[in-house]
Length: 428
Image 1 (cartoon, one colour):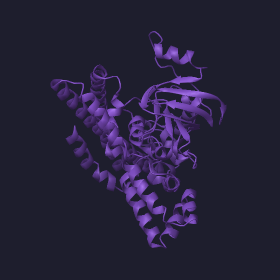
Image 2 (image 1 turned 30 degrees about the vertical axis):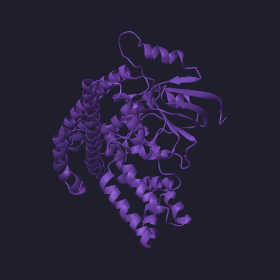
Image 3 (image 1 turned 135 degrees about the vertical axis):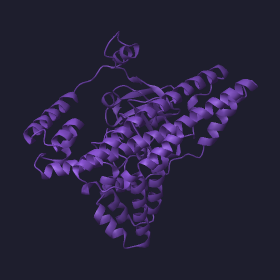
């Protein structure tokens, strides 16, 4: 599996270097076919790594539960976050450190996100030039990331430099995430479990822990391949869209994302006329707006699941139930964020982030908050892994959290119990 990740990284290199805007439509379609094939292969590996990780984590949980009731798998996995999960955030923290050497006006300029102005003014000083260089290195390494690594209709960081400058500007005001005690906590948990096990059980425990961490790392590597595949496909679709706009076959470039791949190919080859394509696009836009209002059921057939029943009966409760993502208790102000690019600039340790999900593109927001509640995820989700690394109390898989919690509402998060308590008054 690791050899596949390394090989695929090499195979993507020609795609990373390509200038898609000078390619013919036939060349673009051929490259797109190859990337779609690659993408399908990576999706298989994401399933395999996630399955292996989940099975090992469950076996590990059963073993330590029999040994001691005081330790969770989350305690043992604290500090084991794959470097790729936090790499982008570490790079942003390095830029924030450089930005702290700038004057107040320059720091404010970063929050405004005017990329040409920022580059021009920063290049006038040695300190500023170093920051610009770091930004270029960051975009070269992580620029393919976005708010959702699997949705290539969304612009990547490379296309939205203002967003990245604003991330750096926000981090200037935030303390560096406290991770010093993570390793100690993990060691204490490890010793507590190991002391209760027989020699045979210790070998099994250590093997399960090591293999779980290994598959966590592999899952993160494969996830980044998924994100980069999506970004490269986006680049090709946009190059095709630019050609279709010039040929008056599309009204706007981003309209291409309302067409299926087969419809895009047909449009390029003249098999679908502009009027028909525009009708399809308009119908899809209406459908998307309508579907956004639907609250889908968790199951489509069979009896209603017990979790669905409990979520309905608890809908009016002052307590929301989820899954423990990271231990700890924190009380603070709820800040609802559905898109990291729209996050407020004044997030602080007194804020608890309420989100639909997170992936690598969300990580910078987690560095300066007090806790997090996510609508999806499990103990090995990106949200839980990063929360444990930063020592943030976290509850995941809280259904409809972004709807049931009010912006600014005072809440208490009990990460170990997987519970979120709602206060009656906003900001109480």
